[in-house]
Amino acid sequence: MMRVIYGFGALVLVFTSLLLIAPDAHAQTVRTFTLYLNDYGFNATRGGPTLMVDQGDTVRIRLIGNGSGPIVHDFTLDANSPSPYDVRSRRLSRGQEQVIEFVANYPGEFKYYCSVAPPFGQSHRERGQEATIVVRPKWTSTVTGTERTDTVTLTTTIALTMGGVTATTAQQGDASTLIILVAAVLVAAVGGSVAWALRRRSRR
Image 1 (cartoon, helix red, strand yellow):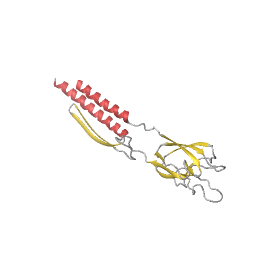
Image 2: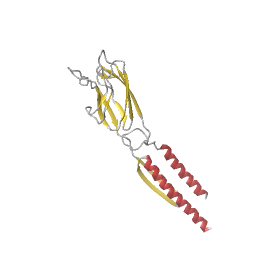
Image 3: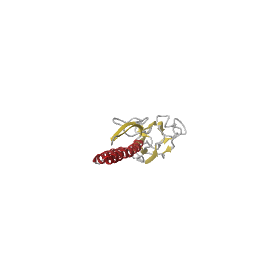
Image 4: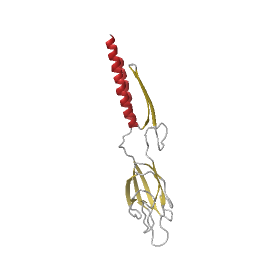
């Protein structure tokens, strides 16, 4: 009977550990950036920084107007980028600020730019006021031993021997799938242990 108890305790420990390492499916990361809207660039006199985010992240950008004289600038990420997004700030003069926020639902590499175009001459974008935002595809799993990759697959082999019953299985998938798998193996193994204990008792 003690063997059954110890075996059950070990299985509970494995199951609990997997619950602890499993990610919260509803957790959301907020990526925060600050951009100075200069003449004619973002944080620079031309171009701007590459913004790196993951699919599903909330992107929060603090925009600070930093143009000279009456010149205004904005932040635009829309169909003309081209992109599937529709994000546009107000046109800010020097010293004005705005915080914009959107969810990066669509993976890919897109251009953000200033949409201001004077009635004559080149637009701000044509003068170089554009840069890149990269939305990396969502992970298929959050378990990795070294560094982040766009797709991480978890491969786990489980072998449980209790009361003469051995359950061995290999599973590829995300952590939530693995938890369901372990729960099924847990039930089967405990059932085998109970059956083993009953058989031993009946032989006495």
